[in-house]
Image 1 (cartoon, one colour):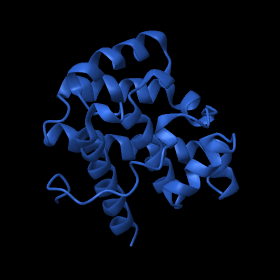
Image 2 (image 1 turned 180 degrees about the vertical axis):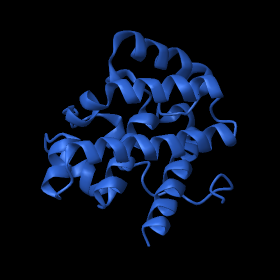
Image 3 (image 1 turned 30 degrees about the vertical axis):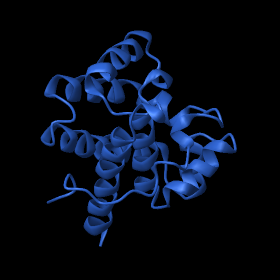
Image 4 (image 1 turned 120 degrees about the vertical axis):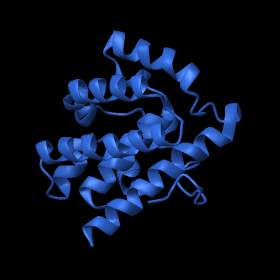
Length: 166
């Protein structure tokens, strides 16, 4: 059962990233490895996860929801209310170390799927995983702005695409 849930969550994440990329510049959330590479480099240099592309911040939220075993909308509502991912997880009985491990494992699968579908290259994958690993404590304890585009409901209901396959 847990494998089915994880596979479903991974499918949702991959589909969401592709759908966000398909939305294009109209939303400002396009997954564009060329442009995102510079943005990611700036975030890494500044040690600032708030500078990560919106699609990646959203995927962190989705991975947290998967780890906590709640719907993404529940996590977004908690973040909009001023709570951190760690505080939301604690409310559901998930301790911070488990949350951190769950997010990192989920992100590893999600980002690797983007490499397999040529949405990211390997260098970007390794840079992102290094950044996420070294900043996970800050990420789970960060308090999002309620107006953060990653908390938008626009990217939550997307159609299944060919990127979701096992």
